[in-house]
Amino acid sequence: MKLGSGVEWSVHACTLLSVLPEGWSLPAEAIAEYHGVPPAYMAKHLQSLRRAGLVSSTRGAAGGYRLRHPPASISLWDIVVAIEGRAPAFRCTEIRQNGPCGARPDACRAPCGVAASFYRAEQAYRDSLRSVSLVDMVTAAAEQSDAEKRSAIAQWLQKTAVRSEA
Amino acid sequence: MKLGSGVEWSVHACTLLSVLPEGWSLPAEAIAEYHGVPPAYMAKHLQSLRRAGLVSSTRGAAGGYRLRHPPASISLWDIVVAIEGRAPAFRCTEIRQNGPCGARPDACRAPCGVAASFYRAEQAYRDSLRSVSLVDMVTAAAEQSDAEKRSAIAQWLQKTAVRSEA
DNA sequence: GCGGTAATACTCGGATAAGTCTTGTCCGAGTCCTTATGG
DNA sequence: CCATAAGGACTCGGACAAGACTTATCCGAGTATTACCGC
View 1: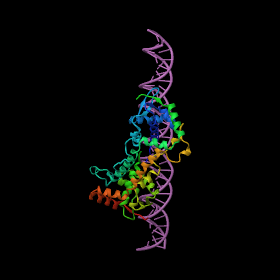
View 2 (view 1 turned 180 degrees about the vertical axis):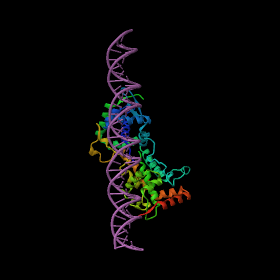
View 3 (view 1 turned 45 degrees about the vertical axis):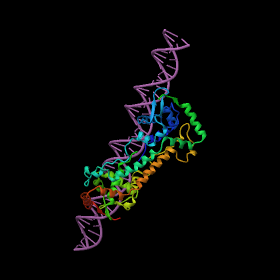
View 4 (view 1 turned 135 degrees about the horizontal axis):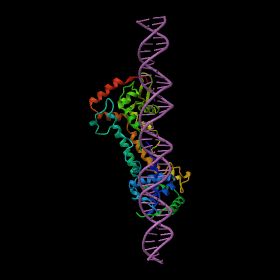
């Protein structure tokens, strides 16, 4: 039961992109520098986000990344799926069919009780993450920061962000 | 987001031990053979269960494993903790303190919005698994099997189980 | 025949390798901006 | 002075290693059984 660090980085990155004005982008290196993480590895995860359709990118000078949809329509679960994939954490290997008392395959249409219980738990996990959007992340971050820090962020953005076409 | 195969094996193993009569034990090799899994690796996970206090073991001839508590008092979450540990799947590295606009450490007493959301989701996951006990696993398996298979299991147990002192 | 003892067989237990996935890095492909040049 | 085109600089994009963790295995520690020997 472990989540890769890319999930944490990606959520923070998307939160930062959420406060970016329309028509502006942020290069991968700038995003990495803002969070103090390795630029190349951050870029790798941004590509995963792009393949999943969460962010959009522009190449060349004055290129960068920006959100592809409104922050309110992107949930934390969307980001987890983009980075980690849709495969469930619990993988049933159907060991009930093994061994001397193994069940016949045709008797295993329905998932076994063990798998069903874990799938239910993961469903609760998914539902919880699906109910949280990037807007919630932005408001939570705003509530935990003072005016000084907010203006520092605004200044850094104005200095770093670049204009990019959609 | 991935769970080791040891969790699945351990839950099935504990379910099998749940139907074992009082005063009897099952050797690790027998448990592995019943589920068709590598014996040495199954034994490794059984040791984790023993260290967690879920099962009790007897060495030497006629030795083996047995549950240490009633099946109704052992939840799936107990088994997950025994195998995978208590560490949360989402590990916050406090990247909000990094970079040019990093927050000061004394302003980070409370977890950030990202971590808090993931912790809530994992709480839902835990609660779901905590509400399922080994008794539920036994009844679910019983409902999905016919009389023929149940008697086959009973026969195999009588042939394989051994008497062990507590 | 019976009790004691030593050998034995069987089991757990922790220490030890191989495989796979996450983590981390690099260089090439592509695009826009700049600048020089000619009309 | 303006249009154009070539060059350059900057960014994304996917291919390429290093490290960590899961998976898998083996042999030593420990205990009940069992056979043997003496009484």
